[in-house]
Length: 166
Image 1 (cartoon, rainbow, N blue to C red):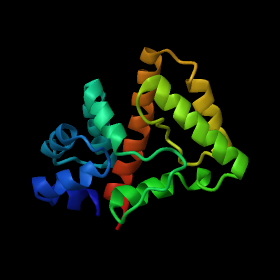
Image 2: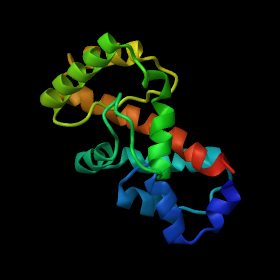
Image 3: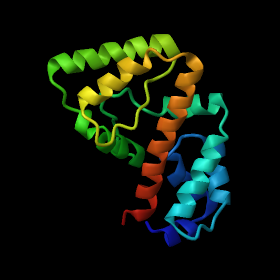
């Protein structure tokens, strides 16, 4: 779909596409209502601006739609396909790295109460593991800021895919 295609969709169709980028209905509604967007840059900036205003509960809703890092997203949805693509570099760690990633995920979830979120595009399993271990040392407020930044990076990539893929 192109930017023009997105702008021309019904609100419901636009929201459906946006929910694959971020599973927060209020966010999708606000971004869809902001149409038409003149270009991809304006679109992504506006959408990330709305994302910045999400409550922490809404961020948790978005996080709930993301599989654990290292877990393969199941299904045929656009969101699942994007998740598999985003995690592809970290998808096949050796057994030692895999068990370390699992342990880091569990420790992170016990500490912060939600899935470890990282923009894994282009990162190796080792880099993801190193980031997880580093972030375990964050206090909750610092980690919330990091999570918001990582969510924005993922959403930005997905928004670009939404309006630049045929």
